[in-house]
Image (spheres, rainbow, N blue to C red):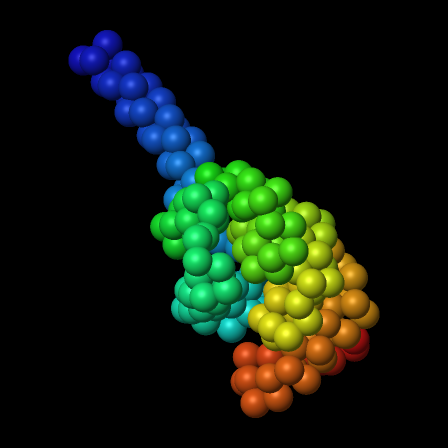
Length: 198
């Protein structure tokens, strides 16, 4: 009897471990991972410590998708033909396939380097990947081109906060709130930063 039980336990254990590794690898491409899991600021280990529904999930919620749809329609209005790279990038982005979308947004940036929306999208992708330094760079590039979108300031503030650049994070949070003074999410974020002493 032990000859049957022990190999069965080993097979089940190995199958479970394989499944868990496979699932973790698959989550990266399908956008099922939580943002901020590795963001360590002021002793906080996860995004749950500061209410993920309010802040860290901001750039993946409907408001940001709405901005994406507006950006596509704006591009369509300003030029009759949108590039194939941009179409593919936006489609993959909306499906949550960020790794693939990143490649197409980079291609679109080569075709149209003055499109702030491309860099804003790259910033969101890098936030999703917890690549905060590249998110910072992409969002700053977006803001060099167009300083009129509050969500970009907010996203940059979050990327800076995750890198322990607290003073800069506060400044960009204030700039987001200046553009949209009635936005309760921005108010709560700035209040959080102030409560931490920044």
